[in-house]
Image (cartoon, rainbow over all chains, first blue to last red; front, side):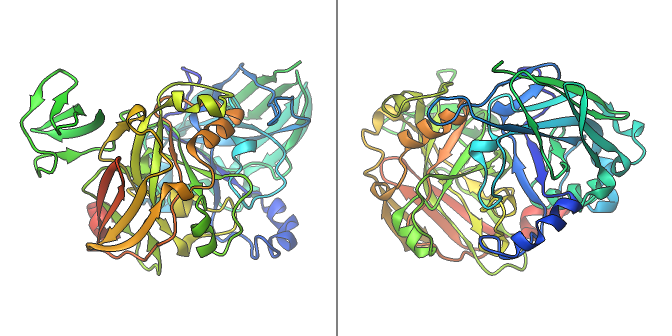
Length: 222
Length: 260
């Protein structure tokens, strides 16, 4: 655990919120084991052992035999920082509960299936840097108009316009707040580009959102 | 020794309970009150809850009941403190659903940090054991990260306690009778001996992926014998030598009150 993490108590991530990714997987999601496409947001947690900060090294993961894994990938999302207790709010009201915005990095193992919770791939120590800071909500006129980019060693690898999300920031806050009461400082990573970016040991990864900042982390293991 | 957190006489207290049911606070004060007194409000027993790991289909017979093959490696999902509530508290049934059931489970509470913990050393990392009721709503299951957060991350749907029993007081956590009653009628009658992946296995498994920390909890799954529960029902989950956990079901409206 990183002592100075920006996350308080909970980091909820939304998977499969890229319309293009959902469209590309539509045939797959109509087959076993899924049987039909998701009707609700597909959510997962990055637990507290994963939380880290801007500038920190991300550990290169080990497999179950203790050897370095062959591949890791990264996604980046706008992080919506909850400002006060958020319980059963409407989408119309939802943005009034936001204190600010930040960037969430999600380093993980490549994901072959969405059927089961991915503990082995997602819960790696230090794999969720959050930062570089929290930008006050009033500085961002429309969170759904932002664009998230990922560069690796200075080369642009991914661009995701949040206008292409299946569900908007406000819709997600509303839906999640009807599952769980959210508290101040809890963060929702609202959506990742469907194609995660492959990374190698020692790579420098920069996730940027204009007006929110750049989150910079380096892979370990080099 | 047993350890719990209570509200008594307007004070939030960390207490120890000895073999004679005598209650002593962390300040050394002996409380003159019986364990079953209505003057005690039971809080979730882990003071600073960390990551809650829960196992699905971890009993051979429950796996059969749910028409699944027993898993070859543990199915583990994560929950957070919003789901926790204490003994003799309420859990809610969402509106408009068909099937919500209890899951009586043995819980191992992590007591110290560790990574790459060997199975034979695992119990050194367990502070103690308690009981939880890991409610599920089958209507909300979808085949994405199943069991998904909509099923398993709801407020109040993980009652736990009333207390934690020291690891040293439970020589074999896989030989304990496990029962549930609904309104006094026995509905679940199993044993922790039928667990597929035991606590040491799960600690070794998880700690290969991640660091476990004090306050993390491992809820080990439930055996055969689950039934639908309705508002008004009283559910008691009991594990021999650990504790009995009582929960009253209420409607969504009653639970959320003004926020409904």
